[in-house]
Image (cartoon, rainbow, N blue to C red; front, side):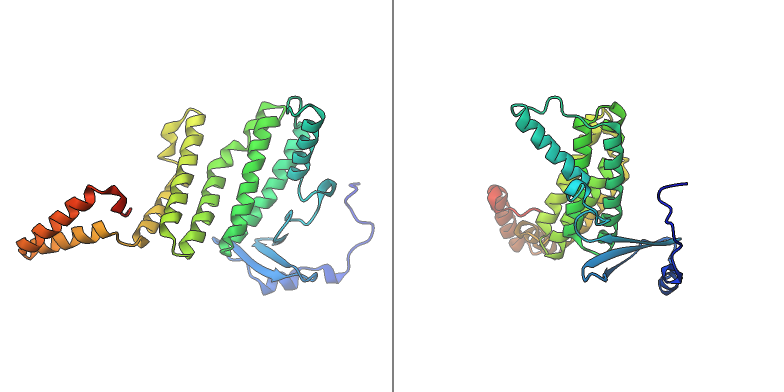
Length: 270
């Protein structure tokens, strides 16, 4: 018999039926909500077809502290620090065994469930935190796993994690009406995805990558919100003046545009 089986059967109060009936599952959407737990701390819940997944907002999603650390990743990062101290500052000889990598992958899956839920709730800073954290897992396993499979198995998820981190980070600027900053973040995310495919020898895959397509659509949405720059305003006035046969006005506008085009520092990105 499994060690996980309890000796005593839980009572009727353990039945989740009332909770499930009060929160119906909706197919085709991500059903999430934020609640305050019995301990007074905020939690995030995800409604699944057969139940409810509940996660802590901060720390490890299941609330555990493996080896006294916030997560297994931080435990192994601490191991690396100790290893360097004991070996003259070198990382040579530090490794992650297959079991270590498996547990890190399982932990990363919990963070994935949480950042997906938090994205739906619009809690973008927390999404940036959790996606950046999972990218550290990929880098850590990629550098120190003993087995090649453990070094590479998570890499297939890098474009998705980068895309989610980028969307969340750019959305913070978007909400603050900082459109140029939002666009810069999206462009950097696209470059990270492009670099990923180039690293593995498939640069052509970038154009068909769904994650890149999502970011390109977001970039187009951001561009629509960009403030019109002075140069673009003059160009629009010129077009209107020509259409109305206001040639003297058009000539003046052409001179102004030519002057601005010779002074790049005055341009505004559109």
